[in-house]
Structure formats: structure tokens, C-alpha cells
Image 1: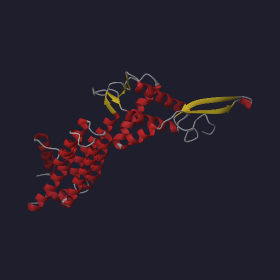
Image 2: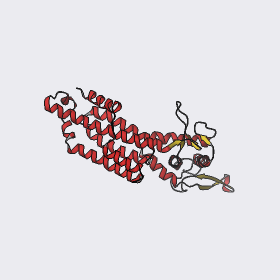
Image 3: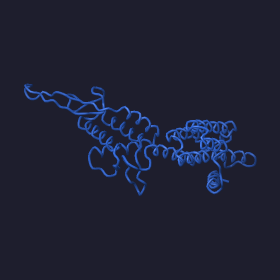
Length: 303
């Protein structure tokens, strides 16, 4: 049997047969559902379980069994072939079970979504161990885990819309409210945009920041899909930028959100001498960057 057929058979069995998420996980989740453990204990227990399961695979010699390589593995026969096929199935089983567990947590909303993403990304690093010895497993499973991880991060940025700032409607997808974490990530993006910008752009980032705060505090919805001002357009642009960056590195949402939590508005001013130096004009604008620290304006001579 080819390796791709093994993968597809494994996947079909998970889709068509009653398959549990794992005895340890089921017990862990049951304890949480009955109030015996907190959501923090649920996450920490799941994290340890995934790490332990990965370690068991290594101790069982799965990596060693696959070291013969993809092409040579197809030529094996007898006992050697059984060991090789078993190793392939164990890796597939590990990934599929992990996906089922993650989806259960995502659907139930029982755990901080950024932590789900963290566990999945840790699993991605583990699965990469098999990429060199078995590319089919690598491609067939890594994409699925990364997909779930990205979903977790995106879910962290948006939830079912009630009020506040909402995501643009794309291809009929449900409009969702941008969460506090998502709003803070956008604020962080606005600060980054303004750091090395001219004074006009810096002022625009402040206008965008104020629009975002007002919209988030409102009792009605403000959609980023209905741009009515330059400030709103900049907010929408940052939202898309954060989404795109998170697809490459889910951790960027947390990093920008931490930055956004500390954002403040600063007043900048410069005195420009006019002709003959007999008069001067004071220029005032606002920014999200501390004056004198990466705050470069085109109005400043030599800036």
C-alpha cells in the first residue's frame, strides 16, 4: 500500500468511524466540564499530554523506522514493511487526534485561543522532524495543523458581532466583532506605521487610533468594510496587515496587542523660521510615537 493511501485511509477512518479524542484528553475535558479543574489547568494538562504523546512516538522508534526514506520505504516487504507502515500510521494518528482535540476546544470556546495556537505551533515544530525522512507525511499533516493554528489566532481577533468594530464581509462570511485583543493589535500596528512616517501620516495614525477607540466603545456596529474616512481606511488596512502577518507567524497578534495596550498620544511641535528669520511658524501635530524616539517628520530640517 502506498504511503498516500495510508494517509487517506487514516483520515477516512477518523471521518467515518466513531473516534475519540484520546482517553487522557477526554478525562481532562470531563473534569473541566464538571468544574473539577480550571480552564488554566485544562490548557496546561492538554499541553503536557501533547508533549508526552510526541515523546512516546520518539521512544517507540517511529523516527528511526521512517529513516529508510520515502522511496526505499515503498520497496520494503514483510516485517520491515509492517514496521514502516505502522510508523506512518502512528504519526498520522498523532496529528489527527490533535486536530480533533483542538477543534473541540475551539468549538466549545473553553480555552484562551492564543494558547490553543501555542500548543499547535509546538506540534508543528515536532512534526517537522519527519519532513526530512517522509515528505508525504510532512505535507499532508503539517498544512492541517497550521490551518487550525491560524484559525485559532484569527478567532482570537474576532467573535460573533454584537457591537463595536466589525470585520469586513468577505464572500458571504459572517461579520464578526473585533475583540479587545484584535483592537489592541491594530493599535500596535498603527504605532509601528507612524514610527518613521512624516507628520501628516503620524497625525493620521492618531485620527485612526481615536476612531478605533470610539467605535469600540459604541453601542452600534462600525464595519471596516464600509470605509467613510481616511482614519477608518487606515484602521482597515492595519487589520488586514495583522491578519496577513499572523498567517506567517501567529505570535505577531500577541506581540502587537502588547504594544497596542501601551499606546499613547503625544503632541509634537517644531518652530520653523520664515524668510529673513524675522518671523517663525509653529507647527503642531500628534503622533503615537514618543517625540524624539524614532519620530521623524518631513517638516524637521534634515528629517
